[in-house]
Figure 1 (spheres, rainbow, N blue to C red):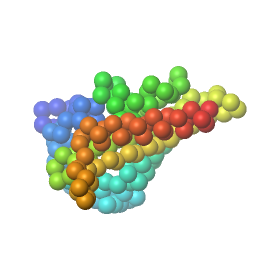
Figure 2 (figure 1 turned 45 degrees about the horizontal axis):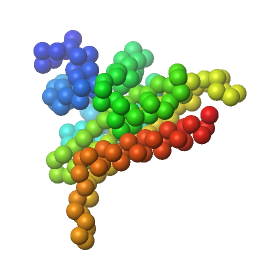
Figure 3 (figure 1 turned 135 degrees about the horizontal axis):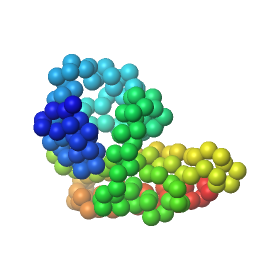
Figure 4 (figure 1 turned 180 degrees about the vertical axis):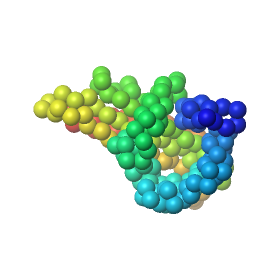
Length: 188
């Protein structure tokens, strides 16, 4: 099954891996046509202020949804696995932002992440990642999991400070990733 000439799996891949805005639009339209009450569903998941149409969410809401997705609390098991597999799909851009953690995580660690950038109205550079560390570290027999969300945005400028650039915001998110990596390394 699908819509817009592609299967739903192809559209999800295009949206989550390739960050294709058109795929997102097609999927949102399909959900609207299904008469699914998206605001009600999001509210039931604890993320009622997310605005899908305008791509607005708080880091706290996205962290909550990532945790619930990882623990299988949002979707059927097959759908959960599909989404996590897509979020774990590697592309060269996955070396950026929170994906930079790949360089410092121990063998057996897994990272599921989604980057986002908004350029209309206000420049926003963001990333969300679920990171799992392998079991067997120290006395642990269970994997540890962490969720991180970093949103960097362009201020309106103040005094004589000009607004920042995309490149500086992107680099700042990567700096946060390395600090998070240092934290994870200190835990092991």
